[in-house]
Length: 317
Image 1: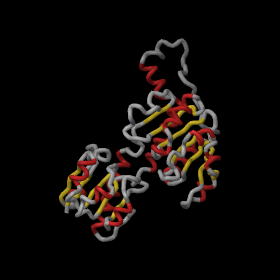
Image 2: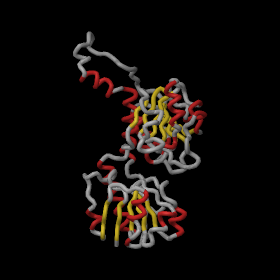
Image 3: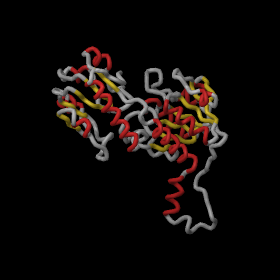
Image 4: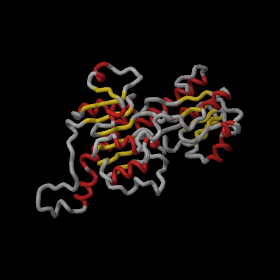
């Protein structure tokens, strides 16, 4: 049995072990694969593990032995599920492995915007505090979170973790209605509303999946519904946000600042209009990447594969 990891570097840059998978058969983990390399590498594979490589009908036509695709992620928009199911291939994903880490990054971005830690630390290390006439100084406005409102677009596992942190900071939490069950204690502390109302919060944080309905949900029209001077956070999917519209809004101060862990195209291209904007804080899609979260993801991926091999697939798409 041949097991191939198409793009394993981001999950395991060297600080985790593939040993569980190696025990199952002929195993090979590639750090990354180009489209042409995908075609070559899956040609005789029984099982592939994948994160961001596109698996469509053309790719599948080159994979006559393929029986299983294990996503090393929650998202699976790179899969042509219709073509996969037509060929009788089982596909699985990894839901809810990194909710705490993504919620933590959401607030890391928010606190960087409101407290400007990096800016002031750099100033101190340049010697500016040593030379200052006063015992303190501010290079940018600082903002207290208590009493502000945060609007959560989506209210799944990650958004609920964000809500709990927000409540601890004294923020008023508004969220779009959830189709999932929400525990009564948390639900009682959250105001559920339609999107337009959620967009009117002081801080808007995106936590919905990418779908035809949510693609570019933040655009010129919806930005127009946001409060002047609002903060926008996105740790969900890059294509939820129109970069050009957001850049215009930051330049005009309609949006005070944005904190983004994801962008429309990744890696971010050099001509993205958000690059170089002083009030746009961008991290390279690392909200999920705490070692603890990655270890949990790898363990769940192994559970998925083991369950498939035993004839009882779990977390099946």
